[in-house]
Length: 436
Image 1: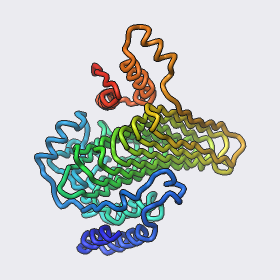
Image 2: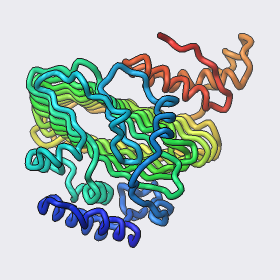
Image 3: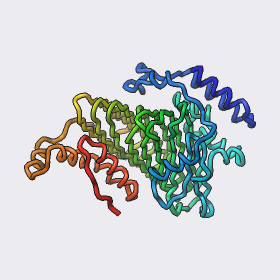
């Protein structure tokens, strides 16, 4: 804790705003009180943070612009999109581009919003993901300074996606960043939000990101998270969504790298007709550890939730999938489905899957299931009987397993990147022709 205390003291010392300064102090006090979670904490039963707690991280004070530009050019998504790019937690004006925003839409860096619209921004920040949510959310709030604020007016559809890219560089000393994304989607509005995390091969940094989203009546958010950190990096993420009547939130989480990855996704369905649809892929190799926790609170009747997650683990990698659906009293006529399928390519890979239902209403349709296994030997024999080598056949079957969730990706640029990344990192690499 000492390293964080020293970094926090230096970070918050010169803060000009008294309210934000005091809130940061309260958040850091909460972080110190809770401490890094151990296996005795149920939500962290299968994810060990001891190694993370021992590492020393600093806050970045600058970055190499040419190296960041090179990483972005080589691995960034080539989309026609509004762009915000952060390098080790610092805004990169050179790589960002928000020109051409339509009226009634505001997209700005969090640092700018805190400087120019402090009262409004502070009223939004922490409303859903406050310091009492968990230790890492408290840590994020303690160091909050950068990220994005997105406000979409009623009856507005953002005319192209918003792409937020996080670049993690291989520095002499490991750095930490704590971005926070705040989204306010007005009634009948629509937003396509893409987050892309890219790490240099030797980067050993910590990213602790929080997203808060408030969706008014009939708002729609299509949210894609594409994670490609290095195999030596830590990623902690939380998404907290408040959904009003008839709103629809769609999430695609593609976890393709990292030493330790932990994602928490929470949706509160607070109005009739609200619906959320989650899908995700956890692809682990070597000694990677990937943990995803989801929670859907059906707080209103006539709400729907759907979840489809796939996990592919090789070598000594480990995965955790914990999904909980809570149907509150009087939340009748809801529909909730949880599907989790896990493919182990090695005898030493390990998955801990736990779908959960808590139902306090009687007129509901709920189903959940988790399966774990290896490749279908009959299907393998079928391909080999047609002249395909065993290793290539295994690769094709593994990719077919993943494609149920990859196929949900609507943009060809993201679909191609995920599919080719998975294919190229299988025990037997598969060369794919990209679709246009």
